[in-house]
Amino acid sequence: MHNKIRSVLDILIKYNLTLSPEKCVFFKSTIDYLGFKISHNKIQPITSNILKIASFQPPRTVKQARRFLGLCGFYRSLIPGFAELTECLTQLTRKNVPFQWTPTHQEAFKKLQDVFFTKPFVRLPDWDKPFVLNTDASGQAISGILLQEHEGKLHPISYYSKTLSNSERNYPAIKLDLFAIYKSVHAFKTYLYNTNFKILTDSKPLLHYKKIASPTDIVSRWLLYLSEFQFTCEHILGKENTLADFLSRFPVNRTEISNTPQDEQEFILPVIETHCNTINAT
Image 1: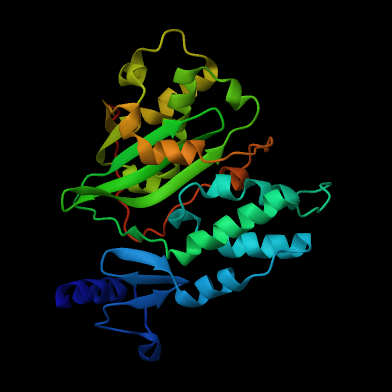
Image 2: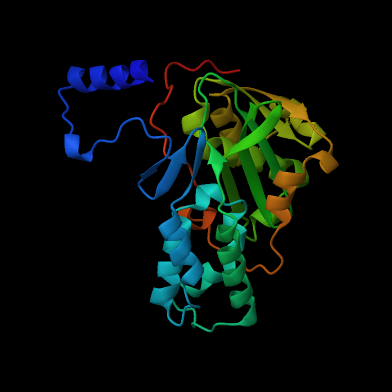
């Protein structure tokens, strides 16, 4: 612990940065920081914000809906399938969409509140351990889970999910599975640059993704982007891909959404340390 504090102080001195002693806290097992409760290898929402979300009344206006989504969205990296959970609520906040609160919206609102009652959390990344990326695709959404092994089990570091547009839902199965890998790697690029990681997929053809015959322009761009990363693909049985499969198949009622960053709900935990040097394509 003392060595880590010394390392931080040395960096501050090197770059001529100063700290306010009154605002510093040392030797704490748990600390609240920027809306997160951080403890040993774990990060979760602070209790006060959980209570705010739990006590939030059903929105009656677009402004109230945006406020609720903004508060919940701050923690989207901790929530599996956040994009799917909030899709119908997000629809209400769009321009030229009448604000009509229906039982479907109430159900989604309640489900999201219930998620926070469970005090969701993820583990902090261990930069000395390899990452595992579990991806999946369904006819409605794609998903990715960034994982690391701890005590013999894989634990989530962060979640990603994206609802599909109408055109994306028409992708062939192998293209959709590759799309899930591409978007998930892009979402977690801060973690994955210059590391050797493993991708778990239930799509056998993707084990030979580099040999796709006559790829379209968009697929070629995905492959070019993926070539910047060092990873291997490993096949798992569909019945074993339960978590990523759940994230991509969770939604029941869906409408088309525009393909924008907000809709994609790309969420990444704050990363202090990055490893971005020269990357050799695999």
